[in-house]
Structure formats: structure tokens, C-alpha cells
Image (cartoon, rainbow, N blue to C red; front, top):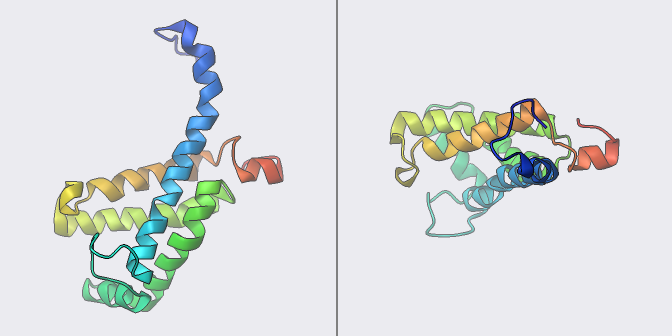
Amino acid sequence: MTDTPLIVPALGALYHALSPWVEALLRFAVGMALVPHGMRMCLGYFKGTGGPISSVQGVAAMYERKGYKPGQLLAYCTVLTQFVAAPCLALGLFTRPMALPVFLLMALSAYDHAKYDGYFWNKMGVEYPAMWAIGALYFLVHGGGVISLDHFLLGREF
């Protein structure tokens, strides 16, 4: 697994056995984290859990208000990322191409939150979207791993 000697060498086989499963769990968490946000932002689910946006038009208006134009196009890109790219990333299907829009959405979200809200997640700051952006970046670079639909359907990482 690594050329670096382990502090507890007896755990090497366990680390090696669990590594692909933990990577798949991380990939699933990174991808699926966006789905409830999309359901709240674009469909109005989970009232009282955050921003008042509850439609694609509301997301477009928010983008326009913040100076991100064209808001309508960006809103539909957000919807596609949250409801198509993110679940595909979670499952490891076309992992690298699907990780790209997830990374971009979360990196831009991190930038926006840093600009307006500061650092801490409980104040809507950069901390939360930056962590998910880094997670998506990992899969953009590394692919889906051996426990992914890419590997099972295509026989290799996409």
C-alpha cells in the first residue's frame, strides 16, 4: 500500500483491505451531500433548515443578486450538478467528469461564502463548502477506485 513503514505493521493488511471501502464511502458522502441541498434549494423540501430559496427561479434570482450572471444558466447548471453529477460521483459512474462540476460548484460556493460569511460552517462560512470541494477534487484526480460503477461496468476507472 505504501513504502512508508507503519507504526503498527500488524495493521497493514487491515489498512490494505479497508482502503477501497473507505474510499468508496468517502466518494458516496461527497456526492450525496449535494442531493439534499438541491432538494431544499430547488424543490422546497426541508423547510426551516436554511435559505428561503425553493425553486430554480429563486436560485437564478439569488445568483443575479450576487452578481453571478447569467443567473438562469447558472441555476440550471447547479440543478444538473446536484441531481445528476453528484449522484453519479457518489456511485462512481463517470467519476472524473462528474467530479469536475461538483468541484467547481463547491469551490465557487466556498469563494462566495468566504467573501460574505467568513470561515465557520455554523455561520454559513467557507469551511463547509471548501471541505466538499477538496473531497470532489480528490476524486477528480484519483478517479472512483476499485469499488465504483466505473470499475464494475467498464473494467477500469473513468
